Length: 630
Ligand code: COA
Ligand code: AMP
Image (cartoon, rainbow, N blue to C red):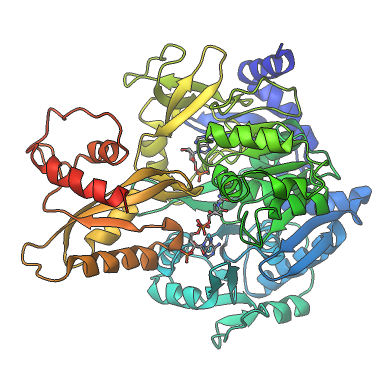
């Protein structure tokens, strides 16, 4: 019944070099590889070692050379500003080459890092492609992060140049990107010498003399730069993601494996052919945006949609369906939280009925667990397959899913599909033994991971090894727990670490605890994720304050909430916090976060045998109840 998928998947595991060597033929190489899979430095693997290529060439120039120059490459739709624009592959080639020339004029060379801190404007995608063109390594920072988070990334990536814009536009108002940028540069230890700033008419900004350059002027004056041939393993980008501490992890992606993997996914996972339109409603600041707003559709010669708006409120819950109608999108990809938002606002699906969405073949979800109700609602109202798939910033593309372009696997609501080629997915117990089918385990993937997955962590190979490769030797630890059922479907249940997922945004509770603990009145803090019908999860925090504190507790709580907003960003949605006398601890002094999480989520929990003083839990339970009912 699932013959084509089974054959393809089995071959990818039995003969990875043959399988990926064949897929790599769909990419244009300047020089062929010496080895498809280089395992000489295991457990760190390299794909297509010795090969040379350029990702920007594969995403733009080769399509122009092949006669697609007049085809639309990128459609920008911005309901928040009332603007729309279209760029053909030739337009994109011209603008990206000039922007790459402007970067060169600022002294950017292959291997230099360039931070991109921009809203959802076409220039953000051009910035990424321009870096790729000259072998510079981009690092896009999501706009919803506050200045201190940007500063951390500046210090880690040490960029030669930052590309930014005067402002972003959110439904709640104009976001002053430029002042956040200025603050971050001030906070960072690394000296940023040059910035290229796009002036948006909504709110232009003042440029800092001898540091900031006007985007339009610099690009206008620059000569186009040609694509530079780089090694297959040359870093294409660093994308920071949350781990268990406040220090973000810089996931490094290569040129070669990444291009091969994404090229495979467009027709096979999403069923999108060259010349067809893919609409990914996410943000270029997240991995989904990197892979399926920018690189994937373009490498495939398709048309991508860059949408600066929300699923609801810009202006209504019919916004996605309007874009599908106007662009003729064949595939739509978004986060379950966006689907929940639409369903809540438009339960009868009137916004869907008001638009002609006949072009749509499938609707893809990822980023967090999909709730069955919303999936069924979407199936009913859209009349197309609704396909969940599971992946991570680290992997860059789906670990498990429904290979829509290969064959229609039966959909199991609640499962994220079956493993994609090259991913040998296991549910393991603590000792590393496979769990029986249907039983919960830690999800790990046997090495090597397929092409396109993380090369390493920027400047921190030890953290790569310790965080992902040491727990189960010979495996990559995903950080998720789940089940593999008797039909081989993967069900992702929850994280096994302190990472939470708020409205599709991956955040570290450890990072929030650090912010709270740094407040002079706070002795210690615990932050954990609580289920939320709309955002999937929201963070909840408990703090213990100095014994001499005599101020107003609610004023302090308001101040702490503001601290998280100012230091991590509005996306953290940290609004639930309370002061308690003590936190529950083990006898060795470790905070019982797991127990707190279970209590807050009203899940069954057992009194931990190691608890120091069980009476603490009574007070904590009362506070959690109060927070939950707010
Ligand atoms: N730049 C600046 N600020 C941003 C931002 C950005 N790119 N994105 C979000 N924010 C701000 C918002 O303005 C909001 O600020 P506020 O507290 O002042 O209102 C805050 O961050 C939280 O925003 P958001 O998470 O978008 O929540 P919301 O309640 O405004 O909207 C959804 C809810 C479901 C509409 C929205 O979260 C959404 O579309 N999520 C999809 C996420 C996604 O695409 N994830 C990628 C994985 S596929
Ligand atoms: P990110 O790195 O931001 O893409 O977040 C990755 C994490 O989001 C994963 O480790 C999971 O915890 C969660 N996630 C992503 N997709 C899914 C899915 N389809 N089902 C359940 N959880 C998911």
